[in-house]
Amino acid sequence: MTTTLAPPVGIGKAAIGALGLLAVATGALESVVTPTLPLLQRELDMSPADGALLSIVLLITGALVTPIAGRFGDRHGGKRVLIGLMAVVCTGGLVSAAAPNLPVLLAGQVLQGAMVGALPLSFIVVRKHLPEGDSKVAIGVVSGLFVGGGMAGTLMAGPVAEELSRHWMFALPTIAVVVATVLVNWLVPHDPPDRSDNAGVDWPGLVLLSGTLITLMLVLSLAARVAARPLVLGALVVLLAAFAAGWVAVARRAAAPMIDPRMLARPSVWRSCVLTFLISAGTSVAAFLVPQLFAVTAAVDYGFGATATEIGFFLLPGAVAAALAGPIGGIGVRRLGSRAVVSVGVVILVVALIAVAAAHSEVWHLVLGKALIALANGLCLTAMMTGVATSAAPNQTGIASSLVLVTRVVGYAVGAQLSGALLAAGTPSGSDVPAESAFVTGFVIAGAVTALSLFVTRTMSKGVAE
Image (cartoon, rainbow, N blue to C red; front, side):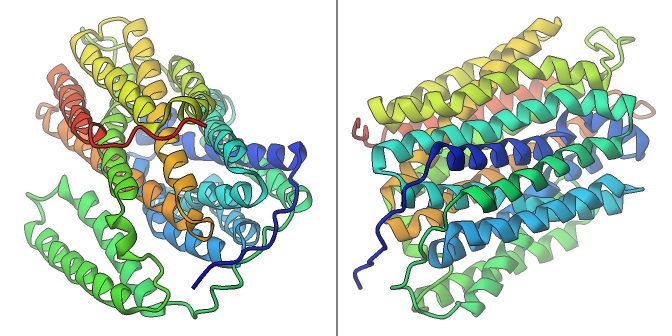
């Protein structure tokens, strides 16, 4: 059936600005845990494995919500679904702000994870209101502002947690999300729903897809503790295989599947997913290990004893680099093609990870290395998101970009869990300080994993310069 969409309604700078502000606010809310993780571990008596779980639990919901939000956004309109999603995010932010202990904080982070679905919904709105060339730049700008919000969250989290409390570091960006959501609802025009897609919701496929993603994230979270619970992990792996096989079988027969498995067979999609997984896994190792390394007591040779505020300032250059990577990546894809941008980003990422493994005795070593890693990750993610979002059919923008975001979540979870396991294994008995070799091993593994993506970039098409 040929899809017929309503003519686009003009979208002005104010509307793009509102979407950008929402991206900044959600990015800030997402990023406050990273620089304050050592502080949270102390205040809530968390182990390294608990810290790794806290660092990814927000993404667990993201993995579940993002494809669903993208599918409903394609069908019913991106703005309508976006506003509803932000209501869930705001609720999660308030729960996190009021959390007295780790279980409640985890519950708040689960609700906040709905924010991961905001980007594909914003892309739907932009794609329906702008011509292709302008939409590529706008998608890059919105992506960059989301990462730029991470800069704001990274900078303010430490000082707010230390001067006020950890509760306020969640409350302040939540207030910003509320304000930005009101502006989006006021300034952004409604994008037309896809009237040609009148099929019902694929509820069996939705249930099986949800079970697949939830079980996958549980497997990843328990993988580091496999020695303690081998039977539980084995049962979950079997359950994961059953859910995945059932979802594929149901989706192939559904008239309008939540995610069509055949979409994964498209070269532009599967290549982007493989690249995203490898790059995100390598990047997340650095995202987890660098703040932990800064926080190691100065009593040992390789430690710095940094406070949460100092860690935030040390990570700020990386957040700035990541914010710049969005628009730079969008313009680069428009002029040079996605393969060139991804290839450059991967090379920078591998070199930076290996360099940090070799040299981390000074603060500036880690600051510079983290900045290069953030820049490279931003370039790669923007290039892949832009390429997938603009190569898909207009009524599949949300779900196509959601697949890349879900893959990013899985890759990030794998890297974070690996990092937590390495630190736990590298901590001598009777000590709470990991050995330096645990950090070095993590960075080397991350560099090796990321280097594998170069084999995939060689198979990419160059892309068409606009």
